[in-house]
Image 1 (cartoon, one colour):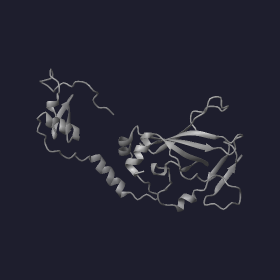
Image 2 (tube, rainbow, N blue to C red):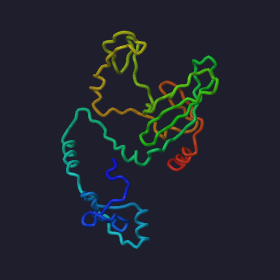
Image 3 (cartoon, rainbow, N blue to C red):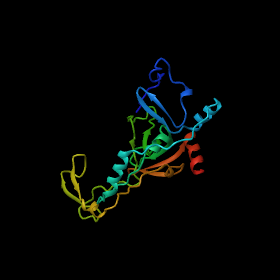
Image 4 (cartoon, rainbow, N blue to C red):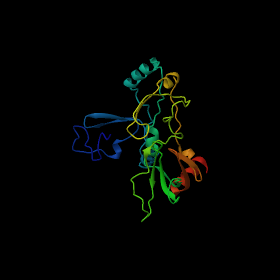
Length: 246
């Protein structure tokens, strides 16, 4: 979070009647904010150009000190040999680079069970910060349909639907144990066979839709519903031109 909010910071004693200015900052120097010392290791290119134009001679950048806790924690993790390891993915960099960046696609779903078989217009939003997707339906005026907040809530969208319940005797790679109550509806109770995970000792890989899977004319599977991507906004078009050359 924010350690020091935006305001004028006084200099440490005995100059507490004065405030920090741009002249007090340089690379590889220390500043004291309210009895806490901070070491400036480097700065971005804009700041370097700004300070050079002011006539400031910049010091060479320095490396950040090692974190003892992180080193000890890494030693513990390296010494462990879990039976079923998990993949650790650093999502902080992706979040910082793409926070607020959203790809917007205009979609159509031809509902087969609809009375009039009219296409349903949807808007798919792909959040680049965490690779999640949500879908909102565009309900026309006087269409006779109830407006719902979201057609699909924001989450990662798997390419293939997970294994559900099968009829007795069906050969599958996962067994349903102790089925109680109805198989239809939300009040059913069932237990899935853990031997499926026991033999699958590695990390579980499940494919989710990425930005590379979305393009105009593509058909995606949204929990059994075939959604056609018809168009996208200008930001999405420029994103695919820049990253994928499309």
